[in-house]
Length: 178
Image (cartoon, rainbow, N blue to C red; front, side, top):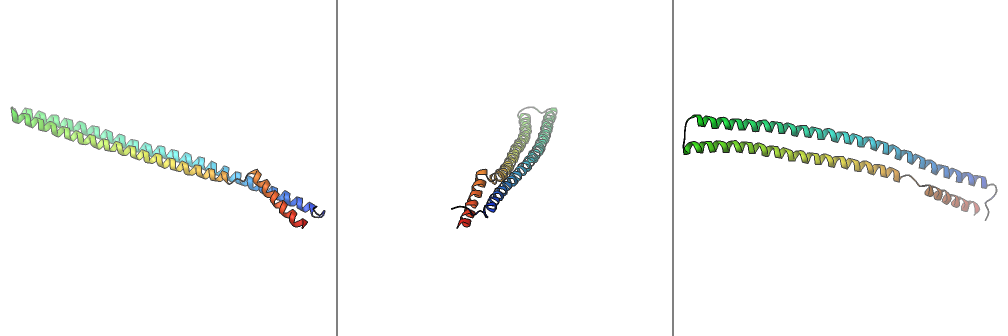
């Protein structure tokens, strides 16, 4: 069946408008996807900068802890040496003096070991904190990537636009011819 002559220009105009509408929607979706991508780039840069600042702060805190521990360890060593010197200065000799000196060395070693354990704990906490920061940064990156992927997946393909236009055209043709 043929298309009525009077309806033909309207039919072709309708097909053209449908096609232009589909292409316009495609272009708008492409622009939204591009804007989403640019926003994701900025957000990722911000996440990286935040990660760097937080990691630096944790590192500074660990370095302070290390310096404090080193000073305390040195102070305990000096105290131990002073106590040993004081014991030797008393002039005592024999088993009692040896036991007192050994006890003083044990106390000094225990104090230094406690400081070492505290520092090791702080170091482990630093590592856990940094691992948490990495996980947060990676999670944020994945969210941003998902947003970008979703935006690009919403762009209609040329074939779907053409197919949609052809389907509408066939439907209009069928209604005009019948």
